[in-house]
Image 1 (cartoon, rainbow, N blue to C red):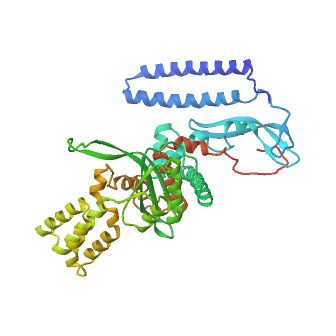
Image 2 (cartoon, rainbow, N blue to C red):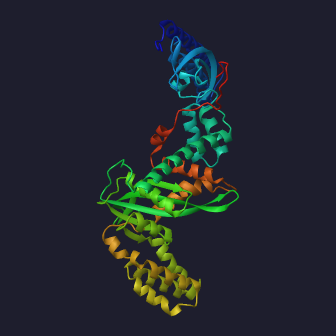
Image 3 (cartoon, helix red, strand yellow):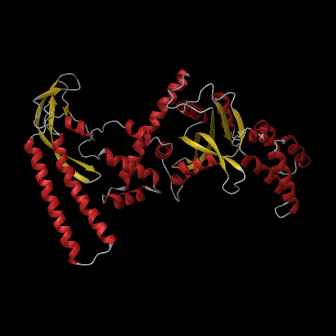
Amino acid sequence: MDRTTSVDRGAAFVEAITTQMTQLARSLSAWAQAEAHSLETLEHQVVRVLHDFGTALLQGLVPLAAPARPAPELTCACGETARYQRMRPAKATTLLGSITFTRAVYHCSTCGQYCVPFDAQLQVAAGSFSLGLQELLALLGATQDSFAQASHVLERLTLLHVAPNSVRAASEDLGQLLVSHDEGVRVQAERSHTPPPAAQTAPPRVYLSMDGVLAHIHEVGFKELKTGCVYTTRTRRSRKTPEKTEVCAIAQSYVVRLCDAEAFGWQLWSEACRRGVGAQTEVVVLGDGAHWIWNIAEQHFPGAIEIVDWYHASEYVWNAARAIFGEGSELRGEWAKQQLERLWQGKVQQVLKALQPYSGREDAVDAAISYYTTHQGRMDYASYRARGLMIGSGTIESACKQLVSARLKQAGMIWDAEGAEAVAVVRAWLTSERWNEAMRLRPPPKRIYHRRATSAAA
């Protein structure tokens, strides 16, 4: 196709835009001098004028990107020849508002299909949103408290009104695309037991944390979205006590899925492999007492250092102390602090010995005995600290709040399963700094409908 832009078309565009700019400047000047305005009023007026001017600018630029003259024929997707039918108008909604443009429509008599190459060039389907607008809709839909709020924020930012249901569709469509991508990686990994390609080189030590958070699912009730985090750490001076150092998480990437532990394990393993984790990497797995976490660790990360996070380990001491001595007893605090000091030093057997006299009397005591007996091999806290290892669960607790609770657990929210997972996955990719990668995965937009008519409609 002839893609040259004629001098006449270009010159006409420049002349029209220049004239409009001059008119806008004169109009703004007269308006500004007519009465006193605050800076806020001035900036709002300029933003609205620039928005309208931007729409006109885009409306004028789009035809210049089209071939000056349509080719008489082209090769159809079926391999046969599609012949030019006519020029046909189309609309698209963009970040600057709705625009209309005309483009050449071709018809293949062999397969009966119509093709519109300029739509493919623009990466837009007639009657749909532009990719730029879809990106912003998905971003706001996933990060604001609700789709209605996202619609409101979009209008405040761009002066463009889009219905909340359209925001929902954009957010969930992107999320389902990312879920399908992740699922493809997982299935391939599970079938071949071959790690996916690494996107980066892993440092000598990498941490994995896992947990689950409940979301309200329509007609099902509360279901657990399993959340995983792959990260590294660095040591820094404590902000509260500068004479001490603390280990903090950096370079976090996340996995969120509404699935069983078996599938989630392969998903997390795939993400770890993408982060470069291999046979030479020291892997540290941090989690609470959930059996599925340690099953995943043993299956996918054999030889990893397994650590029950300090918060959950210490919580059992306090629960037992409350059951033994009562809520307001001074002995409760003294006894708990003594056991916590023992636990801090990794002396789990001494804690168990202190609990044994109260065995069978209180459920909280029996729960603590069972917990420490099961996980004592994951509670060598003195050794972990000596090696500079992180022992807290703050990273994964924060991930559960950021990725799931903050968006999916607003008051009164009930989700369908696909929508909940889709929005959570969009948040996971965004928080993992994989947004540009997510945008590259999007396929070209398709027409809303497909027909084999004999007319030249498109």
